[in-house]
Length: 402
Image (tube, rainbow, N blue to C red; front, side, top):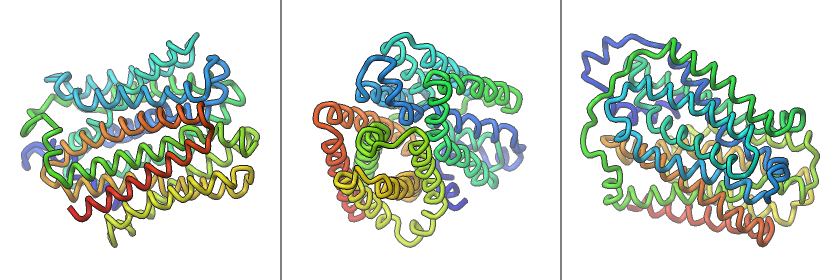
């Protein structure tokens, strides 16, 4: 719960007057509907990670090209997160959220039915729009659903959907892919999105657009040197993470030679470790925010390098990847805590900028990783990941001194 409380300033920027906030009723049904939306969104975003090999074979492209499906969703999320507030204008935010959820269902159907690579990428672009739009609005939506005193609890529930998807989406996708094919796995997301849409329509209150405070240009924050360094460090972290993690499945299948069952267990272990890490990281953040942000990428870089000589040992690889999941899934909590600390009066703008940075970094990481994976093999991908993660640690150190 402490981790979610730290993100409260993000939503606080979108709040209304104190009398209105105090009198606002709690719409917990809407909170849980949004949590299901978070689950479906995270599952949709990273489903290709566990299905990369069969997708590539069916679409007749390499694993690297199939991995670009994550890159294109990240790129479209960047553009959406930076522009959705201006584009939506005075649109009722309930209507906007319903439209985004409907678009998520359309994306799942397009990917599942894609006859070729181009249509597959178009479907992935659609989910990128949903990702950027939803995450840019998530904290402000929590502020509209419950009284101010209950916002930390609402954000904690939102994060529960994220954590649950992190734990089960990849192994479940891998399992479903082995049973009903990768297309069937993606199509399973469509009814989940449809149920979410109906639940949101029934439970979300009317949310008229509120007038924004201050300049809408989020890039003005980069004039602050410490903010610019922190954003660069965050971006380097996510780029290094996804340069490697996007290609975990082909690495496990071609180097460690695991079968589908073992692959699913390893992915489940990574997810469970991440859930545990998210629960534990609050203690480390309280004792040293910057120290935590520096140490995590260093440890992940060490894991990336160690995977190379031990790639053929399934036990060692599984253990290393579980530790990777523990660190990688918990690290974003630290970066949102940094936003709350560095920009207490501008956390909403900072959060919007961070969404763009994270998605752009994810796109760049998976793209660079794919190019290296196809041209030079997994070793070069893992070394590049380690180098970028060490850069993230250095930038975090400079941020702490700025």
